Amino acid sequence: MKSLLVGGTFSDNATKAKASKLFGQFAGTFLSNLNCSGRLINGGSLKELEDALEYAKDVQVCVWWANIPDKDLPKVVKQLKRNNPTMVLVTSKRNTERQYSIADVTMHALKCRANLLAEIRTRGKQYCVRVLDPLGNQYHEDTVDFAKAGNIAGARCVELLKVRRACSIRVDNAVTVPNQPDFLAIVREAAHRFSELLPQVTNTERFLGNASFRCSWGFPSFRNKDGVFVTRRNVNKEELTMDQFVLVESAPNGNVLYWGNHKPSVDTPIQLSLYNYYPQVKYMLHGHVYVKNAKFVTNADDVSLVVPCGALQEAEAVKRFVDRRFVGRSIKSGNIKLNLRGHGHLILARDLDFIRETEFMGRNFPEYQHDVRIEQLMARDEIEGNQNRAVNN
Image 1 (cartoon, rainbow, N blue to C red):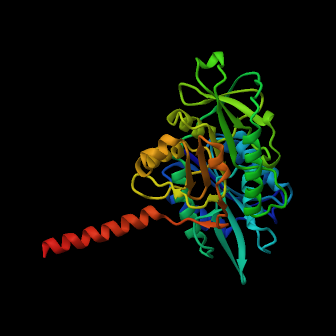
Image 2 (cartoon, one colour; image 1 turned 90 degrees about the horizontal axis):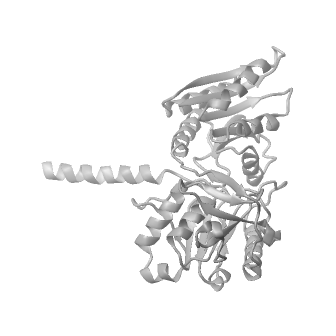
Image 3 (cartoon, helix red, strand yellow; image 1 turned 90 degrees about the vertical axis):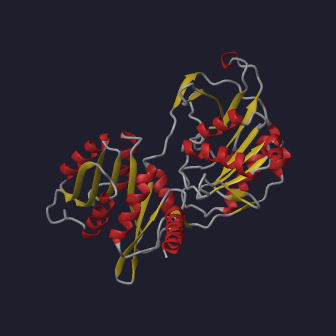
């Protein structure tokens, strides 16, 4: 595995090019979490920056805090994921005057397709930093200790490197989407409610959430299986139309096959897996707010999960959790409401009235995420230690 960490100021003007002490502190502890080779570049010429962009095409982890006074920084950052879509990217956003809202900061991360973002602010006369993700999760408190922030960001990157995803592969031209006026109306109404509950963004370029439905249409290529239609990637659900759904199917290797010129939502692999597992489910709705009076999905150790959009682990966690925690009657009904910690909700429904009757509530923004697993293990070790001491005594 290879990594690249780039920070400081880059310019062909020698008086402008300089290293960043704070970036150096962040980078040092960040690297301590990763067992990999790579490069650390802290300030330099534009030629060195161009070389770094080329090197970034072949890395698994990239921290990019480059300050480029002579160029448009966002455009340079956006090149990273275009050149290397699978890398884990940690970028930064300077917000020293607090001129940007938390919603604008996380939208910046979405635009850059960053997995994590370090928001740099000021506290009195000192710089401080907090680590966020594009869904508005905060992984530690605002701190002037950049080394601590680097350590936490590095640990989170280790978890992100474990995420498994599926590819979307186009197989043929688009097909006519069956008309679902009632479901379409429900999705639009829900999307309007999501918009009311989520923080407002100055310039919305990415639209989150998705919806899907199962249709028994007898597609010849599906070998008598039902077709599943999922909303396109990045469309405004408040103004959704039927032609913005995409026909999809699971490939034998786990990838997603889709019909037409528009890729389906990044959460499509999760929903296809759940449709295959729960044949009675006909509709799914996912948004980045929570559902009232719904359980939060946890893993086998009863530890809440925080997984990014499109992570296949989410489908596995939902299946395990529902099979373990829900009464058999609820599973057979095909009507299940779940909250996904740090992500939003997922509704699996057989009946449209089940979705209509759902009440939504907002998430904290940012939503603070501490390491529940570490806390539980520490508590367990302490209990076992006390038990061992009692036995020995």
